Image 1 (cartoon, rainbow, N blue to C red):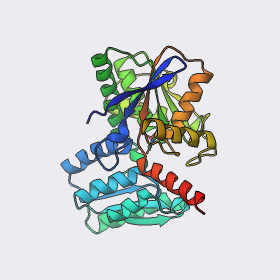
Image 2: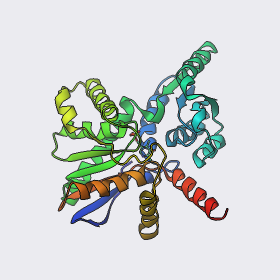
Image 3: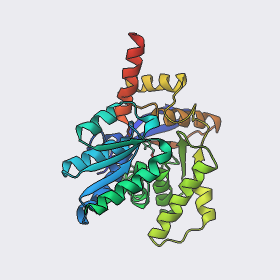
Length: 313
Ligand SMILES: *Cc1c(COP(=O)(O)O)cnc(C)c1O
C-alpha cells in the first residue's frame, strides 16, 4: 500500500516533500485507513462478528472503520461524545454505513464502551474493540511500516530526509515513525506538530506508546533514548482541537489553489502551517524535509462548506 512522495516547493532553501497518505485507496484514505488495515487483518483472521470503537462526529477513524465493517456486513457500534456530535461529512458517511451510534456525555464514554461490550458478549456476540483514533500497538505498527516506505524511497531516489514532520493527535502516528527510526538507528529528526494536546502530557503519551510497542516486539531501547527522540511541538495549537486561525486558513486556500492539495483545518493544514513556522523559527536550511499528509479530506469539505454558508448568509 505504498503511498507516493511528491516534491512540493523550496522553502528557506529547504526542499519540501509531501507523502500522500491522504491518497491511500480506501474511503478517502488518511492515516486512519493505514491503521485500520492492520486492525481488520486481525479481525478477519480471528473469531469476531462485530466492531466497537469510539470517536466524535468528525472522526476520520470512525468513518474508515465504519466502511470496513460495512464491507464485511459486520455491525459497527460507535460510542460518541455528545459535546462534539454536530453533523459533518464524516458522520453522514457513518450513517450511510449504518453504524449503530450511541451518543453520551463525554464523561460517560468509558462506561458506555464497557456496557456495550458487556451487553454484546451477554448476547453471545464476539465484539472486537478498537481504541479511538486506532491508538495501540497495531496503530503504531502501521506507522513503522510507513517509515520503511520512506526509507525505500530514499534508497531509490538517492536522497536523505533530515526532517519528517506531521500532525500529531493521539500520538500513534508519531510513535510508529519514531519507533521505525529507533529500530533502524537512523539519523534524522521527526517532529510531531500537536493539533490539540499540550506538553508534558502530549509528548509523554507518544513516549508511552513507543515503549509499549518496543516491548511488544521485544526490543530493548532505554526510556532516555525514547525521550530524546520524541519531539512533540505544542506551539501551533491555536485555540485547541478543531480550531483554526486566519493564517492557517489562508495557507489551506493557497495549497488548494496553487497545488490542488486539500488540507483540513483540524490536522493537516494546522500542522503544515506549524511546520513552516518551525522551519523559520529554528532557521533550518539546506535540508530535505518530508511532510506526511495524514488525510482528513472530508474535514476539508466541512470547512469549505461552512465558509460558503458564511459567505452567502
Ligand atoms: C487522526 C489524524 C491525525 C493524528 O494521528 P494520530 O496518530 O492520532 O496522532 C492526523 N491527521 C489526520 C487527518 C487524522 O485524521
